[in-house]
Image 1 (cartoon, rainbow, N blue to C red):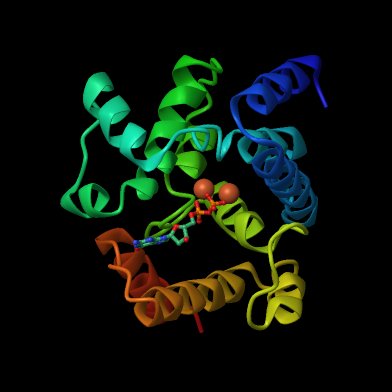
Image 2 (cartoon, helix red, strand yellow; image 1 turned 180 degrees about the vertical axis):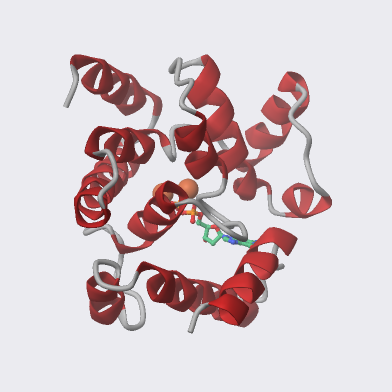
Length: 191
Ligand code: DGI
Ligand code: FE
Ligand code: FE
């Protein structure tokens, strides 16, 4: 771990509450382990985990006003579910507040909530680590999902997407177009 990453981590710690920071560390460590497993740079995966929820310290209404203020485009679905915006806003803060210019890290932050079709390895690692990290409350099939994260990353992604879509349907929440597209993409491509 470089001093630079630890400095960024301390800065993120001050920007979010304690529970969120524990989750963030869980994602960073899980992402680092997955990077070891799949042959990706461990520091970059850790840093992406540290930064993925760096915008979570705001209220839903604030997401909308900050995005408007910064000229970040808001989709109708984000207007309806403003918490989706913490991903986009996180990538913006990572670049402007935390001085990250690694576009692959910025991409992984940007798509960590909805996913996107044809994700990069780092995108997938952050998306999955966000779901399986040790502090996450136990969801359906968690043991299987946690294990499969290290054996078949695409299959793992598909199971998480299926669970997320059915959770959103059951709880009557609107499904973002990108979430739906991502689910359909991996449903149709993963064997
Ligand atoms: O930020 P975290 O809590 O760590 O996790 P996250 O970035 O995956 O965001 C979690 C919430 O986002 C979760 O409650 C599900 C929600 N979400 C994901 N896709 C969609 C969605 N919410 C709506 N309304 N529509 C979606 O398509
Ligand atoms: Fe998030
Ligand atoms: Fe998260």
